[in-house]
Image (cartoon, rainbow over all chains, first blue to last red):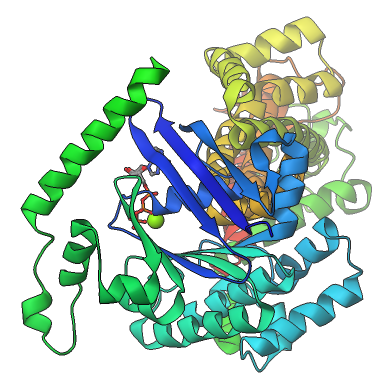
Length: 292
Length: 282
Ligand SMILES: Nc1ncnc2c1ncn2[C@@H]1O[C@H](COP(=O)(O)OP(=O)(O)OP(=O)(O)O)[C@@H](O)[C@H]1O
Ligand SMILES: [Mg+2]
């Protein structure tokens, strides 16, 4: 069986030649939740954007390939690629305010995609959207569909975006830190909601986060990213039981624990970071040689 | 929330004052033959330089007095409004269509489209606008359509610059990226996601441009380059008033007041409309 998403040896550089992704390989099986963790700037969002075909123009893919349900995205014509990505994937974004168009009502923003891209009838799209709003526990769909984004709370907007992401029955959802912009009190609800919808719909999720607590709750497998490089990949349970890579261990030590909050609030160990830098410099050298 | 919003709508004196004056002036211009007390072209040397109604020697029916040929000033102002409004609407809409379209394309698509359009705008803006207008009318010939064309040709850059900047900001927003992921085409995204967000600015600029067009037309009339017929224009009346300022100040002052009120109202009306079109401020 084809993996839902198969990223193979993907490298990307900025205009100035700096590498942002270093030979990233990562496969997400159908229905699997794969967590992608790493500190800020590690390139988590870049991987998501690469998969969804919206890399910034300053970032260039220099090697590797990506397959979506077996289809090599790099081999498709731009138009066919857009259609494929549009039909099979969706994004749950980080900031639910900027992800909705402020001058359009929620209703058309949600249904348009089903009608225009997937060719559904307006009625069917409307029914589907209402069903999903119900699944994300929005009890007054009439009001919400008629609202402008700024008339809803942050939690409501994120519910709307989750509903929109699942509405088109994508095979893969990229969730890029979907709870970080939210109030702590609603973070947990939103996380549970995503987990529940994921289970019901059997959608694979690439779940970007820097919160190991979230990783433990939601994912089956984890990729740990450092400076654009996957330093460890493991089953979630195995990773927490016995982290192999020093960076992973350091990351875990840096995560606050309720049992001993003070002891765990220490930064990632310097020697670990120095070791990683050396490792990455070597990898870059090895990469440059065949590429000139 | 709804109550507050209604209250806020009621409390916009700016909108009502500016809109009220514009509506009054517009209706007067449209129905000029019905509302003007006198024939604006009728000369009567017996009635020359009558003062406005509150001064000694005023005649009933000549509310704002008469000019040195005995023509009724109020009637001339009302008829002059016809040309002012025709030029304002036609020139501003033409400039808006061209400028906003190019600005939207430059800002959203970026790349070579942006470089080309921005370069043209830069070259355009290097000309001093009034000189440019006079030059254009001299080339195109005087007449209503030349004036309209000249204003549109000069002022589309005003729309282009502002809308380009706004569209560029919009194109970096997450919802535009979401639309890309969903599979929309670029033109569709430009029209559906970007355009609605720049409409408030377009509306404000459009109204402002109408005021500017009124001034430019007045300037062109003033230097006798506008409409070469006998029809009264505000700029033409001002030019005549300047000649008889010592004998009949009102022939200069009233058209100036009319002009200033109209121009200010257009810009204020635009700002108020912008606030109203903006879903977040609304
Ligand atoms: N538009 C861009 N153009 C050029 N470089 C960028 C751009 N966006 C991000 N980068 C760089 O790419 C690298 C990876 O950034 P990315 O946003 O993927 O990190 P991240 O892991 O998502 O971090 P965070 O947890 O802060 O979201 C960083 O070094 C960043 O500076
Ligand atoms: Mg990120």
